[in-house]
Image 1 (cartoon, rainbow, N blue to C red):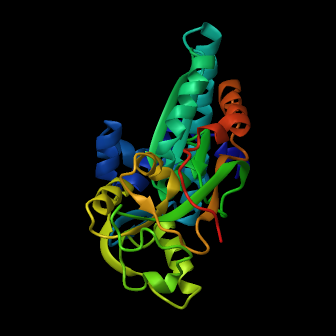
Image 2 (cartoon, rainbow, N blue to C red):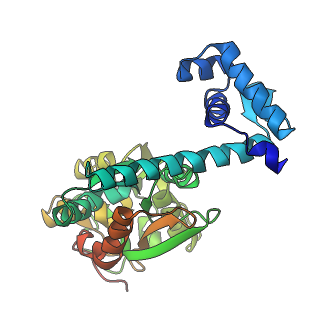
Length: 312
């Protein structure tokens, strides 16, 4: 079996990956600019080398079998290695100072660009790619070796990662400046029981933290509206549509400008952390390693400073 696997080609693996992504041979053929018989031949040859079924038909299209998933993982590692090699060759020939691929969850967009800007001034020849997506997409990109580094608050436990602390990530309750509780101190969850909360949809990290906070008092927050982004929530709070439990880093500017306030609530802010992570078996080229070292040493400096109260 080992000998046969050494005959596997990148064309065969790309055919398998394309079918898995598109759910059909037709979709794979379109993506690869090949005919359907050509894709089918690649898959047949690959399956003969492995001696195991690689795909199965379902009501939602063709999906990978366990053996197919193993080969898909191999494909991802090979593609990552090819990209790393291309970067190394570009560095050798002087075409670039190196490429770095960074992913960050959406809340991190309030500080990560500033950190990258500072790094770029120290290393002007480097080509840096920044992708802002949700936590699930970051997880998939890490698993598939697509990212050198990722910046997030909750590293996925099912992936072996090297994890480095950047700094604290506080969460607060914000309200419009004229809110009835604006001047109150030592509030509790009970005092907020009748307030309308503007919130992200269930499944978001911030929503989960908010629900945990209320659970400690055996309460549930009243959700007035669910919104798709922190930016929309901020504007809705300023407009007086409700209050919100949110990352203090997303509202630092508005708080400093006096466009909204934080409520003085016992137990808040809730402090989480920011981390920069990389997949353990992802080989970092010198540019990415330099970025990692920079973020570990200096990342905390770029975290937004919001005027919030102390935990009581």
